[in-house]
Amino acid sequence: MLDRRLFLHLATWLGQWPAGPGLHVVRSWRRARPAWDGRLRPAIGVAAGGSAILSVAPARVEAVRSLVAGRPIEEWLPALPATVGTPELTTNRGVFRWCTDPAPLPDVGEWLPPTVPGAPPWLGLFDTDVLVVRDDAGAYLAGVGIKRHDAYGHELAVGTVPAARGRGLARRLVAQAARRVLAEGAIPTYLHDPGNRASARVAEAAGFPDRGFTSFGVFPH
Image 1: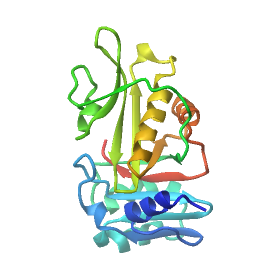
Image 2 (image 1 turned 45 degrees about the horizontal axis):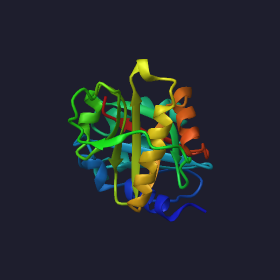
Image 3 (image 1 turned 90 degrees about the horizontal axis):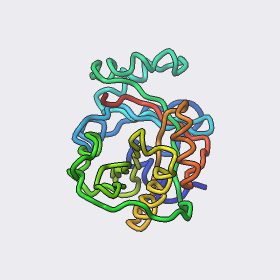
Image 4 (image 1 turned 60 degrees about the horizontal axis):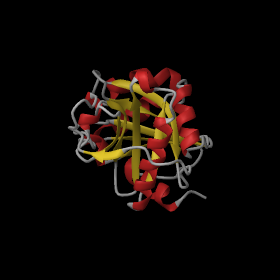
């Protein structure tokens, strides 16, 4: 059985969960409105155990259902951005993970405003504090931002500067941020490209096992 927070997150974020076998295209007003960073996510999907939900804006449901009918994802995914009205955006497929028991790794970062000097531009997209590691001189080494999709699910995004990789900073930051999300009453999630073995190792070490869930959809560049 799914953790109740994850169930509520998927049902809220996608517009429906669970579903029967096969791919189900469902409508959600969230796909037509800006997400956590002010940008659209016009199509978001999650698949598990032979069942998948693809969430799109209400006005795009019938067109997307016609696109995907009877076809494997490899055939229709490239055409999905244009079908949902955003041909300038790109598609994405990933591993979808979540955590209920973060690894007992020691805290390493401090919570700071996303405008902290030296932080990379991607952290500046967040409108709440981010978790950051800096060296003795105050230079940025690694950080985590929390994408608060809804009240039940918060996705973690982590990045480390090349010179600081291999020190275990990312896994400690992810575990630390996951504890905060759980304390807030939500479930922490973690998405990464299937071929990104470094990100997969971080997830596993921080307490986010691969449970066979995948994600797909249309996202900003």
